[in-house]
Structure formats: C-alpha cells, structure tokens
Image (cartoon, rainbow, N blue to C red):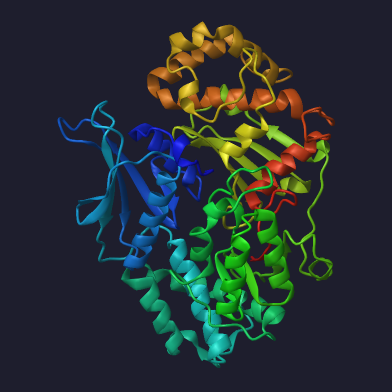
Length: 518
C-alpha cells in the first residue's frame, strides 16, 4: 500500500483495517486466512463485545522463534500507522502488544490483537517462509564458510554433505533447530530445494568472496523495509512497501559496512529509480545481490534468472538474463463465467497468457474485496500479487455507465438486492457487454440469481459485482488488438503489465533488480 503523509492519513475502523490486512497478504487469502511475513494468520473480527472495545484478532501458531513474531508485529504496525491515523499507544493484551485504533467518541475504538497458539506437536500447515528462507542461508553459509560439499545420488533421492548422508552431518542439526519440533518433519521436503539453490548459486557466483549470509534484523530486507518511506517513484508517489518493489528474500553481500554506507547516501536522494541503478551497479561489481527464492520441484534442476537489469549491458549479456516475453491478444484468454454461475465462494476468474497458457492471473475473492494473483504454470508456488491500488489507478480513466471508475473497495458496491435493483440500468449495461457472445443467462435471470447469492452470503454477491465491474472496464478497452487508454497502444501491454507487475519483473515499473532461483 502507498504511504500517506500524516495530514492525509485515514480514519480507521475495524472493517477498514481488516480489508487493509487482506491486501497485505503475501499469498492469496483463503477465507479468513492470510499470509503475513511468511506466517499463516487467521483473522477473527469480534464486534459484539458489550462495553468492551472491538477486536481484530490475528491468530497463528507460534513459528518456533519469537523473532518471527516480532517481525510480523513490526510489519503490521508500521504499515497501519503509515496509512491510518493511530492516536493511541500500544496496550498489552494476552502478553503481547496490541495496537489500539479508532475513537471512543464514535464507537470505532478497538485493538489489533496477536493471539499466538503454543503448539508442542507437528504442525499441519505450510512451513513459514522465514524458516524456509533462513534454511537457505544455513546451507549457503556451510558451503561458503565451511567448504561443505553437497551432492546427490544418481536417482536424485538423497542429499549428501561431504560424502555422507546429510542427516549424519552437523548441518542437519542446525536445520532441525531452525525448523523446531513443529516443522522438522518437513525438512526432507526442502532438502532438494536447498541442494539445488546452493548448486546454482555456487555455479554462477561461487568464485566471488561473499560475506556470511545473515537473516533477520541485520539483513538487507530489514534495512530496506525500514527506509522505504524515504524513497519515491518517478511520479512523486511514495515507493510503497518493500514487497511491492522488491521480491528478494535474501541478499548476498561483499563488504557489508561499505555497501550500507553507499546505500544510506543514496537514500538521501529519495529516488527509487536511482536506487535501482545503484543496485544494478552493485550487482555488476558483485558487491550486493538480492535473491528471490522459490521451491524447486523434486528431481528438477533449478536455474538463475536476472530480472530488471535491462539498463546494464554487462548483465544483459549474461546467459542468466531473463528477457521479457512479449505477447499479442492472440496469446491471451479470459475466463469469467463464475460471475453469473458456479457455487465457489472465492469466485474464480482468470486470464491466461502465452502458449500452453504458460502464465495465469487469477482474479478472485480476497477477503471482502478481490485480489490479483499471478502463477507460472506448473510452478509449486505463486509468482506474486499485483497490488489492487495500482490496478485501480490504471483503470481510473475508464468510465463506467454512471461516469465513475472501478473501485477496489467493496463498500462502493450494492450491499443488498434492493440496492442492486436501484442501479439495475448500470449493471445491466455492464453485464450485457461482458456476456456478449457467451452462453449466459439474461440480465433479468442474473438479477434473480444474485438475489439468492445475497441471501446465502452477502459478501460473495458484492465480490461478483466487483468482478463484473472490473471485467467490464477491461473488456471495454483491452479486449481488441489496439487501445486508446494511455500509456498503452496495444491491449496486450495492459495484460502483460498485470502479469509482470505481480511478478515484479516489468521494465519501467521501477521494480528492483534481482536474481531469481527457481
């Protein structure tokens, strides 16, 4: 989310903060579950409290290390305080700090509360991303600092450290300590990924003298997170949060102190473009490199690809340089029939791009609103999310039948069937456009269908109208080969923008240069 100056920060209430956290989720929300700093969090909104303040509870299992809890808290608190006007100091609730918000005078006063569940047995959920990522640094440090040689057998089933099974090496003890009792049963699932990450990193960059990898409060992810508000985009907008600029999970550095000094000087200029140029120069000189990590499928080989380095002839000349793929509308397909049919509560709609539908943008319910999640076909993890506030800006010039534009807020849509009927002419015009040439019911039948959806689950009905409005806007202007919506000339440029912005690899979008290992 973009940062707001103090004079423009919004008045918070529990519903607005809930929506904000849904948008912060690093993975597509699943019902009330979101992902923050790599930890799966379930939100619980408590509004019937008698005389007590309302509460937005963030439930999650203890990740095994209190550092991860502190990182989650710092991230949530910082983002909320830079978007909403928060006037009260933290309170202690259930032994953890809680963030008060709202006002006692109008009934909006409440807390964001951490509810940490102590689990003494194996966890069923996914391994939190911080554990996955720190595991990578443990393996890389073993290879770089201790000269541990990792190998595998001919069948690619077992990983060895210095010629013996990795479980017999002290490095496995470090992984067990990191994964803790909750997740150590998952270590074996990650050994192939760690082996491949180490193998390709050493092949590409092992000849350089890197500092020991650090993870947590002293790493460059934290450094940039703490300084994002000092940088602005070319448009003059705030740079936003770290994850909307940079997908790097860990950083390779040579000469930590001198690099930090150089970056601190650059931050005084406040330009995201200039910061990206500095990072490219540091990549060329092999002093600093951000690395995005993705899980590698069992028995598959990983590779390194460089992204957002087009301004460097040296980096563009490397085999690892990832050239942006260009497409035409013949390569792009839409599916959005779940707007008027289907029972799935998350209301999936989709754009596929490329031969064999290589890429996907899944547009569907995310909390109370909708989210835009990118996926590479066959990949074990999501490619990234396109921020909805960006999409709202892109579509601002496209007018709906009532003269308004697409809104990312569910509160701007009919909240019951009577309100929908009052705006029937507007929604009928939009519905008729997106269903033209499709086997879809009449608008009258759609309205009758929506009455049942409102009765069963109001928020699903609202989301369907949000999706209808989004698809109307893009079908109106970005479904034929050419378009007159600036800055685009070809409609396919919008769709690749939607895809590559989610993947953080679009030239001209001011994303950070980085290496991706997947």
